[in-house]
Amino acid sequence: TVLLLLLLFLLPLFHTMNFVSGSAYVNNPFRIFPKTILIPSNCEESSLDNQSETGQDIVEMVDTIMKENSIYLERDECSNLWATKSRSSAKITKLTGGITNILYLVTPIVQEVVDSMVETEGSVIIRIYGAGTADIIDRNVENLVFAQLSQSNFGPTFYGLFENGRVEGYIHNSRGVSPLELADNNIYPLIAKSLVQLHMIHMAQLCNNSTHTEAWLWRKISLFIDSVVDSYSELKDLRSK
Image (tube, rainbow, N blue to C red; front, side, top):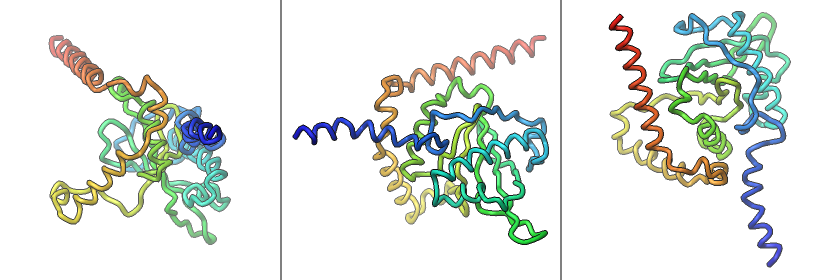
């Protein structure tokens, strides 16, 4: 009986410790790669030169994070592709669809045969947080939730954090669902099932931290309204000059 009670007491602690695999970046919302990725002046272009300052910083950062993750993720093909010695360079492509963030798809290029460069499926997404978004988005909570979902194999992999963003897995051969498809009898039941699975995931880190379990909706709405008012006032002042 004593042993059973001890196991029940320690189980939540073990669940929390599972977040961090040694000192890896993967599924670890507490370790941050010491690099701020500067948003390039040509961020609207569809691709980014990997020889530019920003491009080099991105490739170096992803290379370091993924190589270290490969030690802990022996069966993760994406990490292993970044760790392979035959990787010669990387391709950086801007993704569209982000509302507040800047997204880049970073793909390692492996030299399979002499003079033949082949793009691999080891792509990852670099998410650079938008300026000012921390006022309305709690990044600490967001990263805790993302890491927990990744650990539960729900959604993209959480590969690591850097000072102003996140490295995420890229789901190949996927696309968004159109509004018309959302009403499809073959699709919306699958969405409903996934939502049930999502809400059944136990968020151990949030439950163990009282500051993350308080009601936050009205506080966030107030912050958003204050931000809108401030922006409107600044715009009004500019127009009056």
